[in-house]
Structures are given as C-alpha cells and as structure tokens.
Length: 72
Image (cartoon, rainbow, N blue to C red; front, side, top):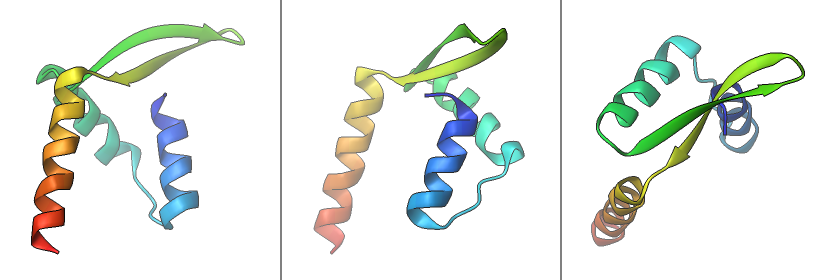
C-alpha cells in the first residue's frame, strides 16, 4: 500500500489525521529496521512507493497484539 492510501484509510476507519511529515519518516525507519520493504510502481504516469510488511514486521505486530491482550 502506498503512504497516501494509508493516510486515507486511517482517517476513514479511526478518525485520525496522519501528517505526511509523521508517516513517511516512520515508514522509512520501519523499512530500515526490516519490518517493511518497498518498491516503486508507476500508475497513470506517476511513480509511487508501495510498502509491504515483512515476516519480521508480522512478528512485531503479533508480539504487540499479544502484549496488549495481556494488558487488557
């Protein structure tokens, strides 16, 4: 999924407005740490960076969900 689409989905589902200046540094950091990977795709003449979660990222999300379940 590309960054702008993430912003729109979060806003629609949760009513939270993410700023580009907050989202993209976070995505870049997660990619550097191996939780995400990205590739560039061209759609309608526009190049977009598409992000995909890695197996390491899935493990992080699963661990976080387990931690939250224990807290609740």
